[in-house]
Length: 639
Image (tube, rainbow, N blue to C red; front, side, top):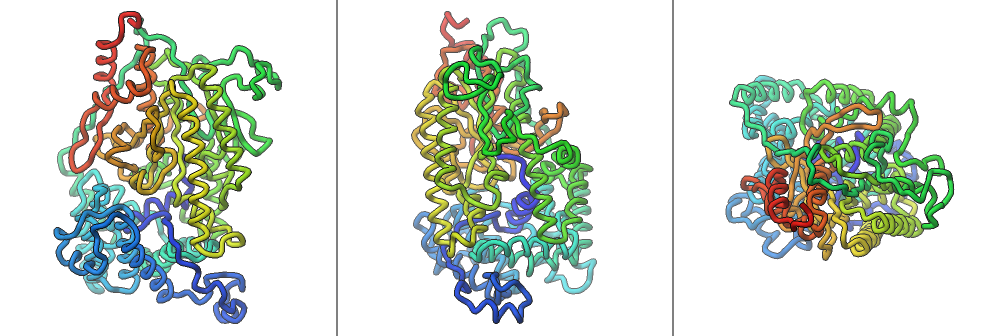
């Protein structure tokens, strides 16, 4: 789960807040696949090859609406009668609980309704989702939609518009206010919207891409034109919230094992897109039979696996961390914190404002793509090092191995395309090599702050218009990719039964099982622990993935301070940061009792955690309680 590109950040923040997603599957074929492109192009002044010719508001709305209505019937568990949608909207309490995908489809309908000025319909659908979503992180979804509806209903008077928007914003509790309103600062000019539409139209036509175009071309222009009213309303309500008593911060009970005589050496690993070994020299796990000399001295088939393993198809990137070049690092690394502040809903920080200033310069698709690439590169540069710093904190007994899998973050290796079968085989070979290293060197805890959602793969595949004619083709290929990757991960879990794998749940506010996040959704592995994120107050982070059965453990994942490869400290946010906090605890527990099995580690971590208040689920780790329990229960030989 590496630092997102600006486009990914924009979609992840803006669209869920308005009631849509970054991406979702669809099987509706392009309705213009066989259209007379050249004839339409002359009138539309767009390239003849574009599949988007002739698709205006009406056509886009029809595509999105028909797909959503069909999938309300075919997706999700039984109990929802699509024919009763009007009754559900009128009486939400009588509606069944809504799965994540059903919420997605309903929110698609809300966007269509708003784009066509059906204000009552749009509001009713959003209110239904807020009332009946199983994922209670969605209880404040649709703030952008409801605010724009209120503004339109207020008429032409700007003061009345601001007051109407304030009424919607006052429904937000203080912990959710920043993330729900950051969208009003992201876009500042029509040219930025045009650039996003242009960028989206480089993909194939599908219900998902049509929804994005509809949002950016039909809904967001009114928000941008009336931006002053939105920002004034945000400022007014924020000032009201600031006058409330400050909420107490959650005590995460971090424990430092420095100087503890009962702590023994423990081998741990960070599996990521790259980690700077120079920052952790005193704690590196060194392979004694493999000096760094360009040869396979220990005859394990891998050259220079001195401190770990690096896998990258780019022959210029052979190190344990990705180096995008001094110029890119110097120019874009200062924006890391701002990107993550925006993700956490902290739009008013100086760092976030600098990112928004960057956003102002994005006026065409080429500029948007270039900025996405540069921020993605810096994210790949920083991510694993930040994770490793969290994983080692307070545990001088830990010895760190580094596994760098360049494909893990997908932003660079698979840029706007999906993996080939040969590349999936190479991913599997990399996993097998890592499994061998883990077993040879007795690595007890591995943190993997990475993952692959099917929607992310589908979004990449939609750029390959020469290979995939319909979204049915995209869905089929994405499922093949996910099954291959799921099998790869299952193999490493099985090959390393004495190792605990701590995995980030993901940052899409989705159910990991319903949406098939890999490896977070893998079944049957007793040495897999999936971790969600909470903020500094102990609330679910607005972005965290979840599932009441699979994601039972949470930890601090918002504005978590740690190192980046330059040696600077930067606070970043994501389940990527929550996961190594739990891996850190697991490493400490093994240092205190080497006899602990992965199953026992998971039990102790879960049972000693503190319950998260309803309506959310899960438990937040308690290092003090877990360590006390292990010390109390360990065998005499481990003391």
